[in-house]
Length: 109
Image 1 (cartoon, rainbow, N blue to C red):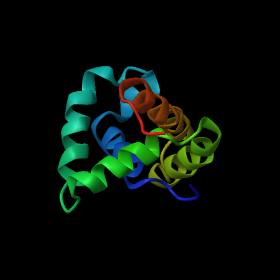
Image 2 (image 1 turned 60 degrees about the horizontal axis):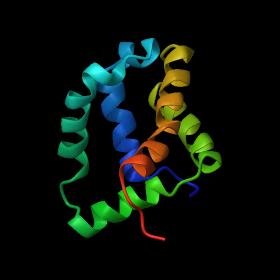
Image 3 (image 1 turned 90 degrees about the vertical axis):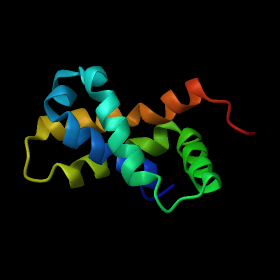
């Protein structure tokens, strides 16, 4: 995976837009319902259930080593001109997404 998964990109944007202060503070949990609604509203349209499933599975199968540079690049891109601590915190959050998917789903293979 040499470019961000579209779902990871939508997650990054939604969390950044709905909870930038909470990302830095490490307390995103309270804002997750709002971020989740935004993710679904922006990510689902135009994608079939099979396409959605494939993106979730692909992201869930991404290794920690593979997601690290993607998370950092995506965070740097989306937080350009903002404090470095925000980029660092967002990248840290994004690195956890594949593991969270794996822990909550049964992936093929």
